[in-house]
Image 1: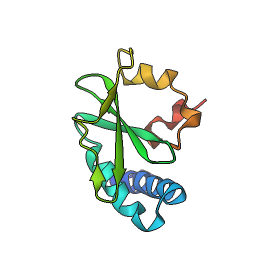
Image 2: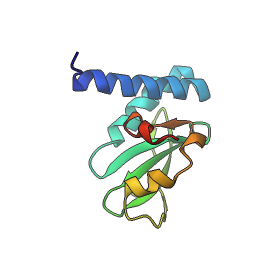
Image 3: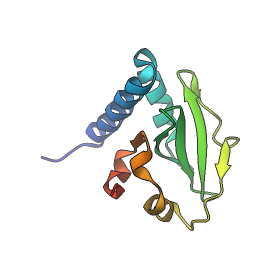
Length: 116
């Protein structure tokens, strides 16, 4: 059976919301998920959640750096002004292959195949 992009998107949002609800506020998980997925486009790509789902990790495709951003039910920290972590990696794939993904609270489903 073929999957539609809407079905895949719903799965991603469900997994994000469930993980956030387990670590933070169940009543605000849907709002937080919406903000995280809204920011996951173009320049910034959501990689996962860390620190008890308090911090979202995004890859900045322009500067090729990891960006750590706090988020809550009101939105995601401005990704342009958020803390950039110099990775020393030439690209997102190289960073992810060397990251300790098992320690993250959530690895975005598009990258879960990298978990060892």
